[in-house]
Length: 131
Picture 1 (cartoon, rainbow, N blue to C red):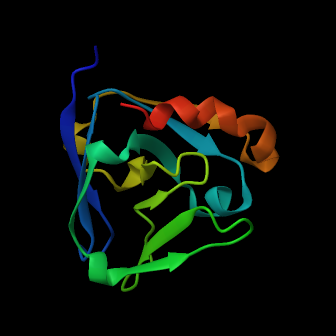
Picture 2 (cartoon, one colour):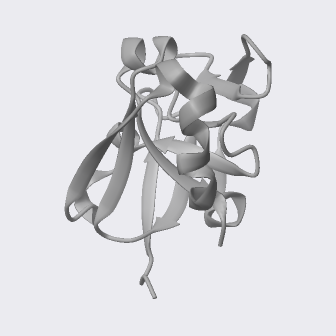
């Protein structure tokens, strides 16, 4: 069983802050879809039960496209998307590992994910939002 630590993170200006429970050593996905490749998002997908928004709900701006299932959440002040609700895992959150405080992160392993061919690849991520 994985032992969890509390990772804290947030946006650039500090208006949005969150914590997420995950292992010290993280495995994240780097997606090649249009929005992820443009923003450099590194996905740490966790169940909703392991994510807690500490502040900034009122600062979040939502953006949806294509199917409208994913809720891309950006800080309305600095524009950083530090987490969102992904289409692949609508029962969880995807945290941008680049927005975590590095002091709690041990090893970071980056795995490619073929988001350009989302329908064929999405099932690979389904297990990540289960407790």
